[in-house]
Length: 315
Image 1 (cartoon, rainbow, N blue to C red):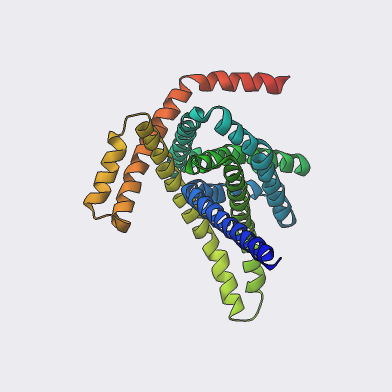
Image 2 (image 1 turned 90 degrees about the vertical axis):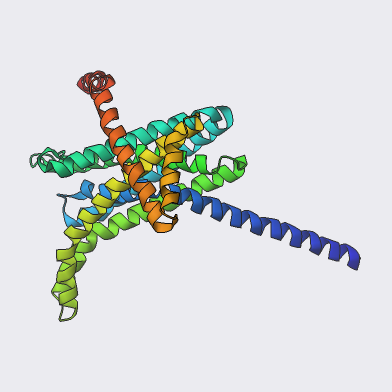
């Protein structure tokens, strides 16, 4: 009897160890995948605040909450099942899709560089229309933000899937869910803090010193923080997009560019200098690829897609 109980306890302990190792493995895989998606996360956090610009202060957090919920639906209801289906039925398609997503990131980064160089050409947002009905305006902004999030989320899920390609089905699903939900929480939590920082600064500025000094510093510093965040997000998009495309080429047998970056990094002794050199080269490659992708799109399928979408709106 006692030996049976001890055997049972041994089995329970063994199962607990396996479960613990599995949890550690999930956390490790999720952290690895989340790190690879960091560039897109930074850009998402930099882009999202513009969707609440021009709205009343009491509508800012509800709008962020609506976009965050739309992001969760994008990831959990559409992208995660699609990623798992591709992983099971057409695993060969993941890398080509990842490369296409990388080219999209390069093109987006290229457009942001153009906006920095030519500020007057920055795209207007729906909030720039003073005649629009506030409810319709909010609905359009939320819908636009969720569409943008869908594209960025698709790339995040593809990167995550490529990072856990050797894992089992259940492990992939769990890691995709953890990374998807975790990134949504981080991005839109950061966006909520960013969009309400000015209000918090103004409230503190009305209090006695030293809170008033802190409040004024927040109000004055937020434009700088947003500018830095946008700049870092642009660099991250170019670096991540260029790196994804170069890695895809290596997988398809054209490994000279990726090996060249590794050689340049090793020549600087690795570490931070080597990493910065590799990221800089990948960023330059991303900028060139972005310009090329934009040119091909503008002189190829872009006008046709624009014409088709305008006809659909007319209906």
